[in-house]
Amino acid sequence: MHQKTSHSPLTVMLVDNEPARAAIVEQALIDNGYKVIRRLENTQHLTQAVQESLPDMIIIDIESPDRDMLENMSQLTKNNPRPIVMFAEEDKSASMEAAIRAGVSAYVVDGMQPNRFKPILQVAIARFREFQALKLELETVKTQLEDRKLIDKAKGLIMKHQGCDEAAAYTALRKLAMDRSQRMSEVALNVISVMDLIGGGK
Image (tube, rainbow, N blue to C red; front, side, top):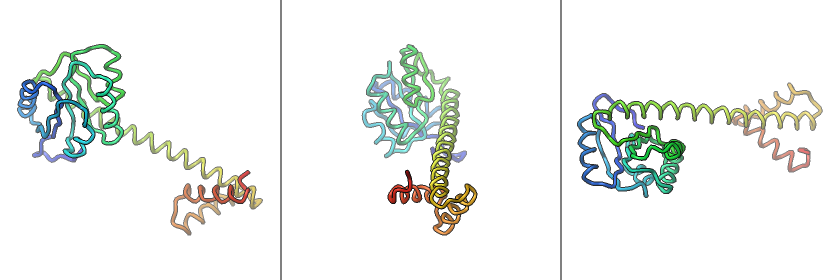
């Protein structure tokens, strides 16, 4: 999402297959301080449309999400995530869960009601930001664990090959990293590759 100033309204991409209803919804969004920058009749080219128009959030008004729609939202969430608010008529828990898994920040049953727009959209944006922060934190932890595994394996190989202790192996890895201006994990991967090549990794 773009960083908005106090004078720039949040931009919205509206997906609705009923033009008359979409026009009413667009006016309601404008009345609540939002700017609709693009309308789509379906989610068939959602990812491409988002890449072209870069909306701050997406609002989808439908009866119920189908398989293709969920797949399109999953692709968008993977490649170019945005807060997605879905207003639907179907209240089946399976549909709600599938929509949430596909990246929907808020699934609202009983259709749109203009007087509810602002709090719903604000909550959806807050939930989206929180989820993205948790996702980034998880990815950071996973990367750190993978790096640690590489470094530990490289240290073990150096200890075995050089007949040194763990501290000496770590010092050797760190010196290599500093000399080459590389991360410890990158150097560790190189060491493992070389050892495998010469048969020292077994």
